Image 1 (tube, rainbow over the protein chains, first blue to last red):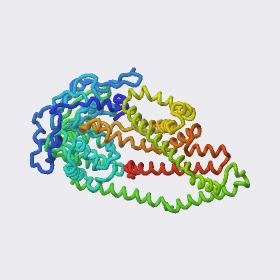
Image 2: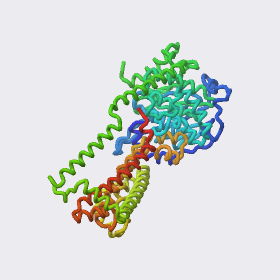
Image 3: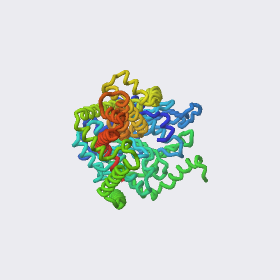
Image 4: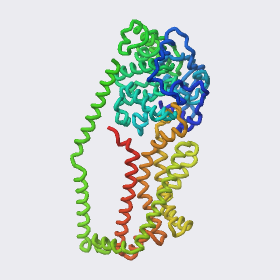
Length: 318
Length: 281
């Protein structure tokens, strides 16, 4: 999280915690919560993602209406407008990325959608309910892996399940499966400090997806990784996303246009501060996508040019 | 294709781990037992020097000599009062330490997570900390008498401040992102406390525990110097007033032994609680 956001939230997060939004049934993710048995291993259900993509009008999962957000500096004088009049609709089951130059408020917008920050004005609705605090049961992947350093990889990945009260044996099954999915088999008993950055990031992604949340937010999750690992993990991510039985809506902040085009259904382009939405570009590349080869697709170049043109003015380059 | 690439990069990561641990092993070219032997040698040489200087370069009554110290120690330990003294000092130490630790952790965690409370109380705590404990000792004597409780009070105070600051800053500096991670995955306040705050404050707690042992000892001994009729500090004070340097050193030796025992106990606790910190490249 940026320094600005730390100032706003304050040094203690009990303030965040006491505003926990305990939503009605609407926000409880499908899948493993409330003691339902894991069905990842046994189901033959068709993948909902295949149905909702393309031209099918899915229902809107996240609605952002006329949201403004400012940060004030410590002496309270300068209110810097970070997000201005953001209006956005995210269809259920889609993968939306948010791109823009540094400091345009992308992360702030994402954090507001997660309920970690309140907007100054306007409303945000997630799954039909206006949010007033951290949205629980959401998958949230940050730039830093943010694994708990005092727990092993296994304990970290199963943490959401432990917190929800799942039995030990069931947890072990799921963790085993996810370790395999993200390529960390055999590292279950390691501590995060013994893993490389890429491995930690993979563990972090496994942790965010293991309890099948319906809503996943990612803030430049592949930022600190090297280019090769990045491509590998991007591919893994969309594979995992498509393999989920329940519908997963994903929002993704990134600097990388190639990543945005390769992964998402729509790209939201924001302008430099104050952050406004310049445009929303639909990515009509077919799924399933091959991340490493996306540049070879016919539509790739025009899409890239379109996005670049939108951003160019803010970047003052020719 | 993706999984092949994944397992290859995982193998590469594993290779990195092996290389770094090999590098570590080659750095330690003096095994532990040899270092211990050298340490023992240094101590023996210093004792020998002490024995030789005494009476020749510096008068014996001032610094005594190792043989006299041993002699005083043995004859002291043969008396019944010695064991009462030791017991009293230990009780004061343990009680003072425990009260100080518990108070320090409790107040430290509370103020680190309650920002309004912190702004009210932390400056007050710092102000009180500024008062030399030695100056407060006579006050405790008046309030609590000659018995163990005045010493316990002084020791608890000194330990409290050490623990409080270690935990307060340890918890405040915890990465708030970790707390958000827990909250967003559906964790309650208790979950956050158990999974983030408690383990995250362990390094601070351990640091405070280690620093607290000598402080507790100082508190107890100072208290016994100023007002007591029992205890190892009381014994040391008596011996000093009788110009019996051997006895004084004997008492100090006892204190060193007590301190070593307490420190090793804390060290055991550290080894268990912080094994995640030691695991790591």
